[in-house]
Structure formats: structure tokens, C-alpha cells
Length: 395
Image (cartoon, rainbow, N blue to C red):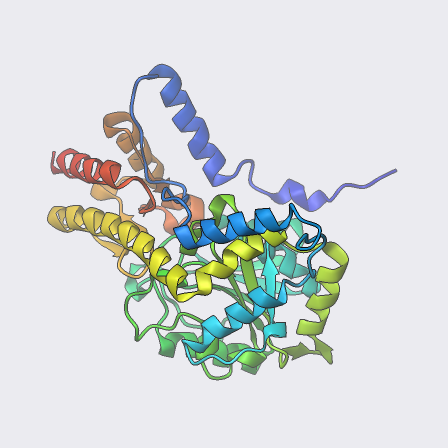
């Protein structure tokens, strides 16, 4: 008789964004003509840039001719894209070989799949508030999870101490949901601790393109010692609007070894067994992101999202409400007013002014009392939503 994976029974009953969708659907059923101001889920609203569209069209045309047709792609990524990504890292004085770059169908997929490299006996450390999939992927895999709480007292940027006892460290910077960014000294503390303890850092760099302050690291590999303890996972979803197109990449240095096993070689074996690679069309389009033209165009789009953030931050500043994020990240993490719980604040915004955000409690218990706004929405809607928030909370 087949045995299912009983660890699924340890998952919470429903996913955060599913709960939000249920509440929004119920409201829309009762108020079918209401316009909703969506600043909850982190989906982009601007189209792919012209440079990417041009390369996608070229790739589609290539598939129409026998001489340029592409079938299966290399499982670890097309050489032209792996090389372009490695060259991109040189802008941060990070030297990578192209075979340390692995092309994927997105960071979310990779953050779950990468756990194949590690024993179920390993303990994972999650700094909360955190992207819920970090926890859920480890629950599904039957791993013990250590939850490290952060707070406004440390800017939601904790550093390790001798009480930390885990094998896999999840670090997201710029952070989802808080928008906080680790500076070099704090990130170095995690790198040093991982090297000392033999742990491996899974560094989620999905939002690195939003960093304005150039004193802050975009990549963990800007930190000395990271090549022997870190894997970096990045995405074009927010960087270049690939949420519906799906492409990301993972960096595994060749120096990264544990118990005589090389994690780069292990991942090559994993990908060549479990995938047939990302489509030629999508990889060709992604290659445009790393050209000078593509970089200019995607940063023009990012600037629009930054203007959304500035609009929301101005409203919160005028209200005197504490928040972090916004400047170097596409998320704003605010303290709920008047001691409200995060779900109470969600209901207030939805029912009174039709603004949708994300309750902090869904990112871990220490997120209770906080609320996340995404700045990826329509600019006109953002202006109206900021005005509505300000008017509502002034009451």
C-alpha cells in the first residue's frame, strides 16, 4: 500500500495569499462594482521592456526555421545566458565562471528544489518575518526548522550569536516582506558564522536590482568568505517583469563542499536528472536583460515602482507611522495603527477604502502587528490608495 508524504499534514491549513484571495473574493461578490486597489501580492504591472520583447520575437522566428530551430536546451542553462549573467556580476567585482551559474524557471522553484542537496537530518534556520515558502518547503521535506525572530529594535536585521544552531540559513536581502537590507558588516557576520559552523547560506537576492544605496551589497559574493558557504538564488520576476515569463538563476561556487562532496557538481547531476532546461525562447529574451539597453529599460520600469514607494512613504511619514523598506526594496513594512492586529488592519482597509495589502502575521508570528504593501501596482491607483489611507487613518 502506497504511503503519502505525511509531512504535508504538518503544513498550515491554507497559504497566506489563498486566505487573502478568499477574503477579497467574498468582498467582490457583495460589492461587484467596487474598484480594488491591489497592493498585496508582489506581482508586477508594467510590461516586459522593448529589448526583451525584441529578443523573444527573434527566438520565436528562430523556431520557424530548421537552420535556427532549438530543441532541448542544456539542462543547466544556455552558455550565452550563463556567460551574460557571470559578466553582470563583474559590475559588483564578483568573479564567477559561467559553469557556476545555473539557469532556472524562477527563484520560487529553485528555493524548493535546492533542498535536494541537503540531508533531511539538517536543520533549517528561517529569519522571520519570512517568505512563507521557506518554511513550507522544509515542512514538506520533513526538516526541523529553527525560527529566529527579528523586530523593529534591530531593524528586522538580526545577526547570529552562539545560540544559533542550524545547518541551512535562509537570508533574503532586500527582504521580503520587510524591505530591510543587510549591510556588509551584518552579512559578514552570517558568512563568518556559517563558515565556522559548517552551515550553508541560501541567499535570496530576488530584489537586488532595487537597491539604491551603493554601500549595500547586492550579492552575498561581495562578502569575503561567501564562496565557501553560500548559494545565491535570484530571479528576473521583479527585476525585469518575468513573473509571467519565468526565469531565474542560481549561483553555486565550485569551492562549496561539505563532507567531501562538491555542491556545484551535485547540482549539475540534479539538474541533468530532473530537468530538460528552460526554453530557448525565454532564455533568449532573458539575455537582453543583461545588455546595456536592457539594463536601462528595466531600471526605467523599476523607477516607476520606486515612485509608487515614495508616494506611500510620504503618506506614512505625514501620519507619523513607523515603517521600513521602500527605498531599497519594492516592499513597505508598516506598523499597524492603534494596536490593531494585522488581519484587523487588512479588513479595515478592504472594507473601508478597498485597499488590499498583506497582513504581517502571515509571514511568521513576529509579523503580527505589521502590514506589508507591495509597490508593484498601477501608479494611478497607488496615488489614490495613498490618499485614501491618509484620509482614513487621520480619522
